[in-house]
Length: 407
Image (tube, rainbow, N blue to C red; front, side, top):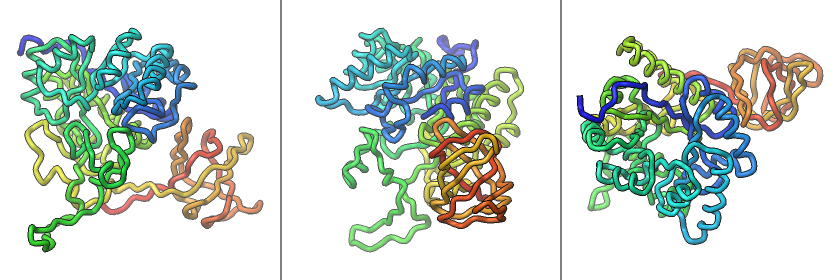
């Protein structure tokens, strides 16, 4: 056994969350969560946590017995420095357990405010000397580059006592450690400032030097499959990784619930000597019912080949599709019913639906619809039926119909 690899505690499981609903979904499975404010992060669309409600959100995290890590991982320009100070001070005041950062300005301000610092994967930490450099700056953990293989991680582990975190599941980026400029070049939306338009997920064509179109199988030529390492938990543990990170701060709450539960079980099974490949394969299939782009093992076992590209799928390879239906406009607790404005499409009795919001997540079947005081079997787009619900919902919660297609 390499000298610095620990046999003791199970690795920490860290889930990305964006609101109370996703936090609640993983509270019984995760050891920690990571999130961001509505600024200075790579997920600018995750805007439900703000400086005004940060302390309350962190209190909820700690109330569930979890740790909370706040990402401040965008590029910091001169005009951002005052805002950076405000964000770091808010994090310190709220009692976050660590700040995830890579820009030296963010690292120094976090350390000056007494905060633990986790070095973001954006720093592309790929060797032990770089790990030790960040330790000398006061960092307590590094999130390793996603381009490392297991042998390289083992070598780093043998030569440092720093906490090592690595992504084990979720979206992969075409660019080194996510430092992508394609979105900014094509659309003026910088991925490094949280505004990625994901052009790598678009349909592309390949042309020869003479200008002729090259006929190949597949259309989505640079769309990387999602990382999924649930079938390789023992190897990850043996490599000495302290913390397993799941990408997905913008994924839906059902994804957060399923992925966290499956990885929790896989980790616990391994630590208790009960892990089997058969059980891991079953959990992988269950995870595959949630939004995904197909699965690969990324760089862990070498450079990805053609099987690491999702050529045949536009974004979602899951056989289960979420179709937007409408929005809750009112809730009637005495009747366990909600008024739903059908903005995108109609619904009918027997449909499986999800009602989701910043504090809401309900999966149920449509059992009753009422239009103009009369029970109906279906309601069309544009109508506002009363819908029987199995739990509390809130105004502006979104309603989705779940449709399973042939794989």
